[in-house]
Amino acid sequence: MTELERVPPGVDPSVPSSARVYDYLLGGKDNLTIDRAVAERLLSVAPDSRLTARANRNFLARAVRLMARRGVRQFIDLGTGIPTSPNVHELAREIVPSASVVYVDYDPVVRLHAEVLLAHDKNVASIQADVRRPRAVLDDPEVTRLIDFSQPIGVLMIGLLHYITEAEDPAGIIAAFREPMAAGSHLAISHGMAESAPEALAQLKAATANSPAQPTFRSHDRVLALFDGFELLEPGLVPVQDWRNSEDPLLLPGHETPQLRIEGAVGVRP
Ligand code: SAM
Image (cartoon, rainbow, N blue to C red; front, side, top):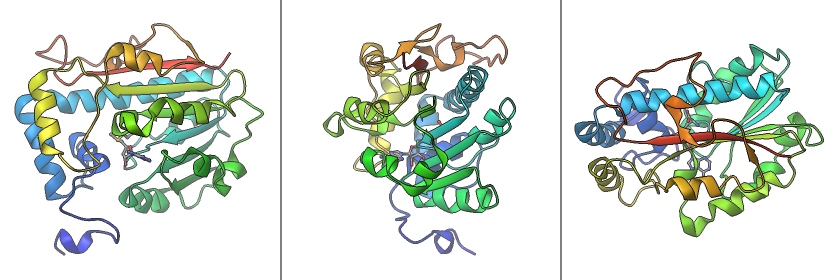
């Protein structure tokens, strides 16, 4: 079967997708020629980008485990990506075996894989929805079935917000999710940084021009401001590979500072 025959309905194989480019960087197989071309252009100037992608994923794992240890039993993972193990429900259930998780992504390829993977678990759901319409996400029947907003929840925006432009109002989107979150709820964000190596940013921008995979990387101060209404847990907003990393060291050989910089933090709703 050719690659084009495998493309699900609603997917234009000439347009790169951030989910599939990231899948390729993580070593996955759910990507198309156009996605591999974007990733290879990035890797040609920033060869450590595979490690950066892995470090971002490891940040997600540490953030979920920490939230579960702090009593969070229900999670909304916004911008899930193509399922890659361990996933949020597997991580949370290491600590809270009954944890519920709703996965949210607008990419039809993500939906396809998540449906197959999660079909048999009644406390895990996957919905295809756009976080730029937060009300539709919050009112989705799977969200209202699995998430009790009177109790603390964990909201994950890992590697997501740099696909939201300024005109699309990332702070407003976060505020819409923050508003129903009970005290003790947690928000984890990781975000591509404007302080990344200029050549890496330029290649990524050029390779993803006019596509939804084009990122808007933001400065450290701008990302920090997105935690408005949350108290940051130690160590604050830092490179993802440095965040509470003593238990899970990931070295980035050859580069003290990776060329593609991603920073992350976890905040708590007081
Ligand atoms: N969160 C995963 C992780 O960090 O391992 C995947 C990150 S991947 C780089 C970004 C994901 O965000 C993609 O799967 C993409 O489809 C999704 N995404 C981007 N914009 C979105 C939107 N407006 N609504 C829902 N999902 C979105």
